[in-house]
Length: 422
Image (cartoon, rainbow, N blue to C red; front, side, top):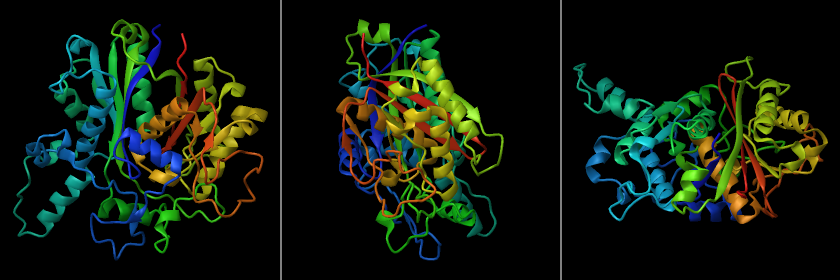
C-alpha cells in the first residue's frame, strides 16, 4: 500500500486567517472569542462566539460567486487555495498545474457538519416576512446542501477524481481525512485535498444549541468562556472557519520534488452506540478509536508525544475523553502532552477535525504543544498527573500526534500524524 504524506495545509479561524497567523495564535495562546457581530444576539442566552475576523473572501474568489455560495463554501475555497499553493500544485494563474498532477487522479473529500444553515435561515426569514408568496433564491438549495464544499473545490481546480462530502456531526472532518487517505493508500488517487468548513454562527444555531444547554453562557467574559478541563466549564463556544490538507502518495510527492511536511500514519472510527448527544461515560467508543488508530499506524502508546483532544469544555465530554485516554494509553498517558485548541478557536463542529489536524501538523513541524488556555480552577475529578498543557505552549519535539474528534450520535474519529522520515 502507498504511504500517505502531507504537502500542503490551509487555515481560517478566529485566531488567524492563514497558516502563519493560525500558528502564531496557537503559540501565543490567544482566544478568538468575542461578542457576536453577524446578527443581533441581545435576546439569546449566549451572545458570543469565535468569529473569523477581517476576512475578505474575494481574495481568491470572484465577487460574482458571493451571491451563489454560502459562507461555509467560501471558507473552504479560501483554505483549499492556501493548501494547494503550499503544496506547489497551482500554476501562476491559480489553476492546477497539469504537469504536477493528473486531474483524473486528484479529488476532494470535504466535511461539514451542518452545511449552509445561514442560507437556509435567510430564505425562511424572507418567506416568513412576506405575504406568503414563495420567492426563493434560485441558489438556495446549492448554497444550503452540505456536499457543496467538495463540489466547489473540485470544480474550482478541475479535480475529476473522488469527490464527495462526509457528514457525521463533529467527527465529520476526521472521517473525510480518513476516506481521502484511503483513496491514496489503495491507489485510487495520487492527490487528494481534504478538510472541512463550517459557518453556523446564526440565530438558528445559537438558539438550537442554547436549547440543548450545550453552549457556554459566560457573556460577561467571552474570551475565557471556552475552558476545557476547568472545574467551572459550562459548555462549548461556537466557532467558524475551515482547515484544508493536501494528501499525496509518497511516490507522487517524491516524483515531483514536493516538500513533505508530515505523514498520515493511521486513523480509525468507532461508535459509542449510547446516546444522541452525551458521550459514553466510560469512554468506550473513544478508547476503541484511539487503540485502533495506533494499531493501524503501528505505534505504541509510549511513542505518542501529543494528543489534540476533542475537549469541547462541556462537563461530561471532557472527563469522558480523559478517561478514554487513560484506558487506551495506560501509564503512558502521564508521559504525553494533552491539550484542547478549542479553548482558542471555539468548536468548529464538522470542521473541528480539519483545523485541529492542522494544529497537530504544525506541532510536528515547529516543535511545540499548543496550550489549553483559560484554566483557572483544577477539577478534582480529573487526574492531576495528566499533562493538560494549561495556559502556555510547551516547546518540545513532537514526532507523533493524535487528533480526536467525537460527534453527536456517538461518532468517533482518531487520526495519527507523524514526522516524515524515509
